[in-house]
Length: 254
Image 1 (tube, rainbow, N blue to C red):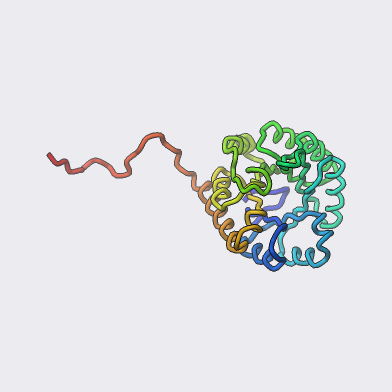
Image 2 (cartoon, rainbow, N blue to C red):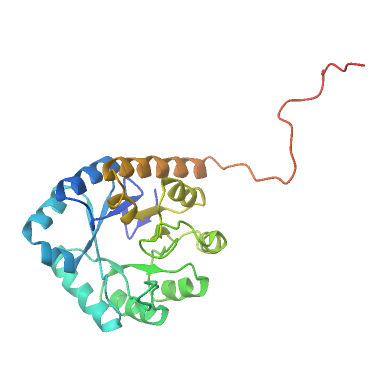
């Protein structure tokens, strides 16, 4: 398993905590998925009160606070500092939104916020696109994990740019990569893991499923399958058919 800022996760599945039908279903989904990390919004925790925070603590998973809803460097940095105090962790999922409709990150503000937070002692998990140059700038800013989106947040469109995601994996062989945002089906998560991604972060695909608990389990199995497939060194695709049965000894009929 890949190291995330000195922490080795028991399971490469990270699960968000928003939009579930009830707290009980949220808890059951976490248990079904065996997720090792829960992403939590500071704003949501403040609004939900102590019951929500107690539920998350009882799950026994690592907490990854996020800066969801932030649109400026100042907002993101301030929210991150507040989250560190509330959740008692240096981990922060850095989100700086640049476009309201697509929820695409602002690349310039993202890099600047990542630099500031790294200097302030945070372990930054940046929500980014699959853009290679942006990824390089984030690593230069001090990020030791990258979280490229598969598609826009909550869209369920899957992996929109396979080439870009493969390029990131090839270019950053030693940086943990987490596919983040846009996954809708377990098969999409499996495909990301087959490419060599180190973890997958889910939320809407599980929370908004007809049966969130069953979907959480389905994603867990898919991520396990994709991880095993990558480790097994899959065969290279071929343009032509190759017979699996030898022709030697074949009977020829006149």
